[in-house]
Length: 462
Image (spheres, rainbow, N blue to C red):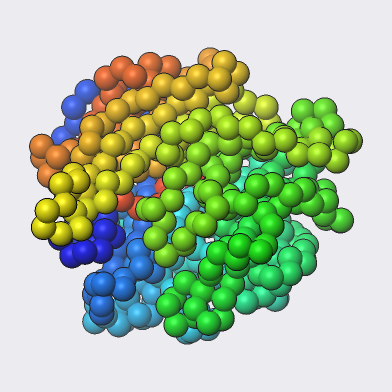
């Protein structure tokens, strides 16, 4: 154990890039599934000081499984070759970055858009384009505006208007931009929004008529630039929800209890009310040690007529990475899915009888109509990543589909890509694809349908 939880256990980085074909499968893969399950996350390539290493600064590594005709054709993991990563690997650089100081290997999300694959991050750092097989092409201008903003890792697609929306911030700027693109990634318009104090705005939400902004007490700090993550908690700053018309205009702000929105599950209109379901990190959130936080699933209801906001707790189990059936994004819905991961702190030293570092892991299915939840447990050491919902071939209900996630199998010492039936959530997985290696705990991913000969219209959610 290194003493740094993000370099050991389920977080420990892998040191090799692997390509494996014809993966073994327990159970049966649905015959209609045709595409790639991709996930991004920090995987440092060389560590100068293990004691001070920050997890979110690790170079991005994308892990992918190709599924077709009931088979798992391949698994690949590849570092995203920023200039620094290519140099460290002794390889030629991929493309020319706009600003070498901001040329960082994207490690937050990986998506498919108009037949192309992109690794995304935030803070004004350019996305990188990847090949179908996850090799790096180079930095790209997805969502780029003249002011230096670009597509954020939590861009949202509206399945009805076929628009891609992004709320982008830049380090050290008091302005964010709401960027709207068409389904091929061409920027249609960008709206500047003044947010004094430069808060950390990791995610946002979208409804039929509104864009929802989350102003938090986590703010930019120039003094912390040398740490690589220049954000700190400001106990004197309120947390607020902003409601702005999608076409732009004045933002109405509503104060909430001190907190940071980790990620949005969904939002929708209900008459004069806007309902927003979020994973809420409580007061004092430390961006340098995210594993110490205890986020919960909350609902914020904004009454636009009365000018009031109501806060309710939906589920108090520690959880993150909310996802839903993407066909219901921005509209009334019933079901949401989250990952529940609880860290046990490592022993402090001799005589400390607390349990060693481990995890109580589950994927949760929330029935928001009934106010109930189901848990598919994977055991203390079965580290589970974000679950992505994939609709069935001809779905007959909102939850007619599958939840895919990477789950560590402690008996094999390697990771499985697990497929749960959302209709039988606590039942046995319908399939487990056995990867030859471990996939470290990471961040976000996507199911990208089709292949290089079939240009998918859109495959980005979360």
